[in-house]
Length: 231
Image (cartoon, rainbow, N blue to C red; front, side, top):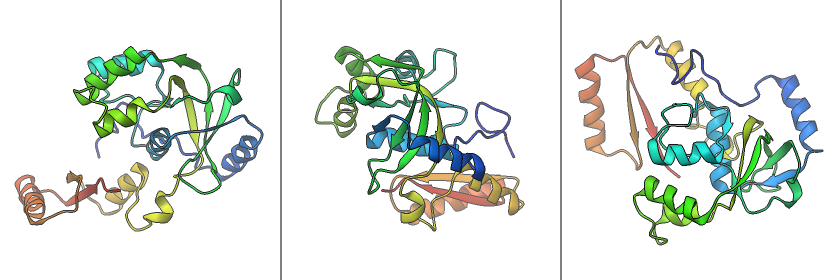
C-alpha cells in the first residue's frame, strides 16, 4: 500500500487511546469554550479521521493566504484549500492557550476537539476577498461557497488539535462513514494490492458504474473504493 500523503504513516488527530481520551474529555470541561461554525467542525472531523494528513491542526493566516494563492503552505506543502478555524466570537477565549471546540451540529454542543492556540489573527475584508477569488474564481456574494466563506468570521485561530468525536457522522451514517484509518485497514484485510478509487458528488448512475468497471479491468485492480460526497 502506498504511503499516506505527506508522511510515512497516517497521522489521524482523533485520540484513540481510551485513557488519554477520558483525560482530555475531563480537561475540556474546564477549558474556555468556543462554539465553532459548521465549516470548522467539518475540518475537525476531517483532521480527526486522517483525511487531512499530514496537517496537525488549523492553518494560520499566512498559510491560508498562501494556499489560496499558490496551492502551497508557506513551508511548501501542496494543499488545495485553506483549513481554518474562523470566528467572530473570541471574548471567552482571549488569552487562552488551550480551548475546547464545541460542535454546532449536535444537540447540547458536545466538545468536538481541544485546540492549542498558537495565534489569533485578524483577517481583513480584502484578504477574505482575495481568498474567495482564488478558491472559487469569483467574489460574487450570491455564490454559495463565497457566501459561506465570507460569513465564517474575522478572526483566524490557528494551532494543533486533538479530536474527541466525529460529530454526527458515525450515528447518522453508521453503514457508510469510514475514517482514513478504517479504509486503509479494510483494504489491507481484503488483501488488495491495487485499488481503483472513484469519488462522486451525487448518487452513482449507470455511466459511473461502467466507468468503474472499465478502470478496474484496465489496470487489473483487486477492487473499487467508492467515495460519495453526499449530505
